[in-house]
Image (cartoon, rainbow over all chains, first blue to last red; front, side, top):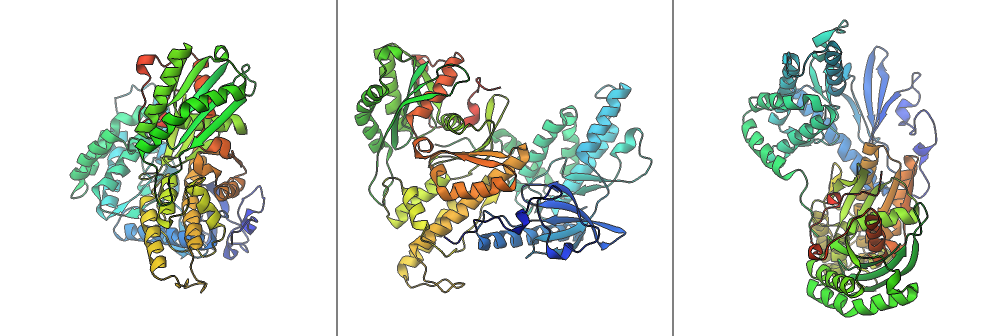
Length: 267
Length: 349
């Protein structure tokens, strides 16, 4: 059996980063900074292109357990598919990070660095402040409703151009930083929505796929922000008006909710 | 406490006797017997034949297990049997046997979820405390993690199980089902070198095997028509061993990938492989490489515990029995559909 049994070079132990980056980034005087490690990819912040221009570097290292041919095929396919989806979104006006560079054989894509925080962090911040100020639930929620509407429209625009995200959570939605002094009150929820992490995205116009996207987000919202769950209807109503055919998706969503994403187990 | 377990959800009939000496002490296996219904090459096992097999062997196996365990009827505290999931007819015949023993010996019954049996036995044998579990067999493909009194399913096969895919390909090739079709595919795959193109169907933490089976069947038919076909990259003549190798490399890569995603999701570095396909050494090796990359390790058991057996039913049943769980005679049914997450796991924190 022609299978690698020895761990490849990038498995070298290191407390900084468990993976060695592709050669092109190794001579950088300010090495890329590891931000997160997912199951598939590593996300770095780098100033490789220009000292003044931070970029997000997404690197899919080869997996030692996979057959080298299969590994190369999957990495290439996934990097290219993610880059294609992002380019298509940006061309059609869906708010996503810009693609700066791709090397599908080495397994990396370099993207615009989006300044700001993910929606999960901002919503929790907003909820916490309100609690501190003693504001009752259900009153003066217009700002949060507004945010939900903006999210709904952004998702609607993405679906409208034939892309499904595949992993919508409040951690994969960002709010761009708009103002330096956005420290008090409702400005926390300001900023343009940017959809990120298209690692599981695909080109699809199927109502089923779109409805599952919404269902996954609804479940994620319910588990991470139970206090804001009631406002999900705001998101859906904004979604419903965002593109032709959105109402069919909302009908489908009811079906998906009834059965769940999973089938009942057979044998 | 001592329990006897009866398993017969598929083509294996298993009877095992286990003892839990006292809380915190490891379980003691008194006996663990199995008799497998083996169908001829090119054929799967049909429910009615499998049920007949179980009916004709269960009395003999129970007697033998009791003799080997050197326990008397008085020593046994409860009778555990597989409630589901599995094939209807074989499940029924074993449930009838369990009821008969309960009435004859005047013992209480405990209905056990087959999947929970695999998980609990795997944890007991390997000592893995709170692992992400990959449960892979002829009927099931699930990635499971424990949270709040349930074994939660994070990912699963959306159509046929991975073991079913392997078993059916063994039928296509008309290779022996003895001792198991998957085992014979594994032996053939060791001689394979060429990796051919197959679909790769992973969707988040779920996966699908039906399309892969169709594709490999097409490749097998092409190979049968043109035995001299050469691989366009290496120039080597393609063999059935290469087909087995390709199938294994593809489906196991998918399983390891969804397991890794679940591990990243729940923040665990331990992984436990259970179920019949879990015996496969290549799958264990690949899982080990993945786990090492995450600073963790893989736990697996050998064929005594991976492949369906009575002891795992006895063990999981006894765990439930100790928390006060009973299955009254009138409720001692079985069911083909019984999801892992339906079972309330009272014995864990």
